[in-house]
Image 1 (cartoon, rainbow, N blue to C red):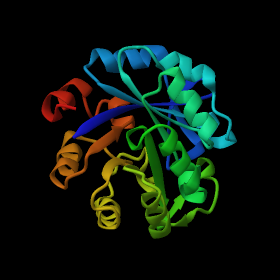
Image 2: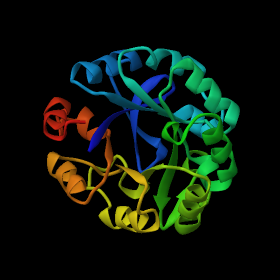
Image 3: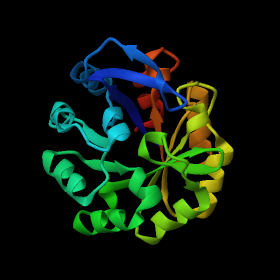
Image 4: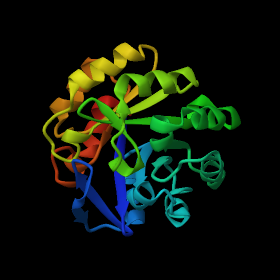
Length: 237
């Protein structure tokens, strides 16, 4: 199981949101560059970077891209990447893989074009779920039915789904196994990355036991529930 230590950025600060609420953020002390260096030094092969300002406004911060690429670690990046031009620009800057949420919900054809111009390995569909609906637009819209969204992105060739339980995100209450199982049933051959609620090594072991392909870890790393080096030693990701 691959591990993705998270760096969420709001107002140029490293933060974690609670339940996807921009009004409920916790700021952590390191700069983006320092935090990325810390994860790399702990042995991370990937970092998961979310431009929260971009997610909210639909306009990605290309300055943030420059801060995270070329630093010896693969970057999975999301936030405001809603068009094929954004995808091509991010990949050209050195981002390894882009995450698309709003397009996954509302315009899966955009993902199809992005995949056609890059590859299925470089485009991730974000499936951010609250009350059975997958939302986009920085989690500020009403979203669409989960089944429709997953079927839509799979039909256009998406290989990797990032599944986030918004009600657990940042709350450290454990992963939503029922949600992950439901998505696995809808997309049995997809690569599934889990996010939301991960609080401990026990949670990671549980995710590995149910066949999740990757885990995005946020607050648990910042607040000491999980030590990244220890987790990487155990899971090899």
